[in-house]
Image (cartoon, rainbow, N blue to C red):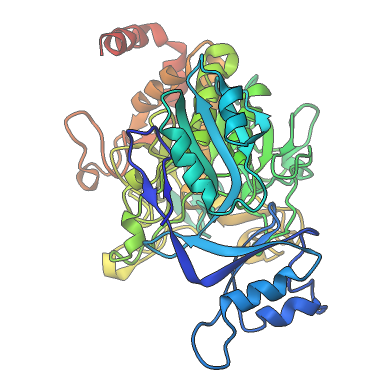
Length: 552
């Protein structure tokens, strides 16, 4: 059972186990072993009775579950040997899984290793027969290295042995999990008081009033997600999109690729919530902010994940919005064991976030926000959203209460309006609206394939985006409004400001404690106008906060 340390040697580790029914395949052509469309490959018969569990198109890897037992069922080893005979098959191997839910965890023969700052790394790496693939620039004396081909599971032993050294601070294999986009699939009631279908909806984040002062001029928001349709009219205009990147493919084209089992629709909607122009049909919270679209498709924990934060910081991002993270438990099933599965933040990603927070914006630090999650579970089990240097955003609804799926916990910093669902077992009422109105991929792609009931017959907008996926870029837009009027603020000052700019909605259900914090809403629902006002009057509140912070 391989053991992994995402933290330092004296911090907790976690174990993985080998699956007895899954097989991982990587092709040299990066095409599915089953072929494309109606044309099957000669080897597809080896998996004709198998089920595709997950694919990682950016790595060219597919994971299949095959039947086990029975006299006519071929064993895993027999299938592996047959598949290895193909010249297009680069790797066939066993699959590691999370012991709690049997979710596959892909490992590569690569390591992230960070030495103490003044250590001699060259000798250690040479003696361990490791090849430097990249010296990372987001951490001091840190490397992304490769072991010899066919090292296989021994990569875990190598990592543990290296971590025992006094001159090694972090060392772990590159582990990749399926990523969960934090969306749950009107008009813009989240921005202002709005009448929809004859009903007045008053559950907004007071954005329209903030726009009287600023619309985000001079700021840059990075959206790290599954791709952004940068051809959408709401992202048009000279200088709107800057430094676009696909960190998985290593190109400057962040557009959705649809090269996996699920379409890349999510990032376009998130970008629209944050900073859509608002000139054609949907305004973002910060419509005059510029956009860095960074495509990071379905891999959680990859080296590319870390590089996404580095790219954002190096290219001038003020705010970084991340509406993704570990997969959630079923929000309606309180007994789902996934609710208490701990997914830690890899050291590689942690170092990259630290780099953005410490080096971004000329040393003032990027403001990094994460969607809290949609599992109706504690955010503390999510190592990404609960990390102390990010801001975790929960979801509240059009009734001024908590969305039924929204995660909760001490790490929740604040809430922003989003979608909701009725659920009679929880006595949770029907929402007034389908969700959040925002940009969708142009035409028949995306959440809206041209259905007027979805808000737009042309399919360029959707009225039902939601989840904490929508809340996170909404809060990111408010952070951009703040920095637009006060660009000198440091990241932790913005975090403190957002805390002070919240409305204490649902005072009875929110159960705010003596410090004004609620496990459901954090410090409350964000108020954009209040945030902008605080940003223009920092001398009234910021100096005492800094004094307390320094004393602490």
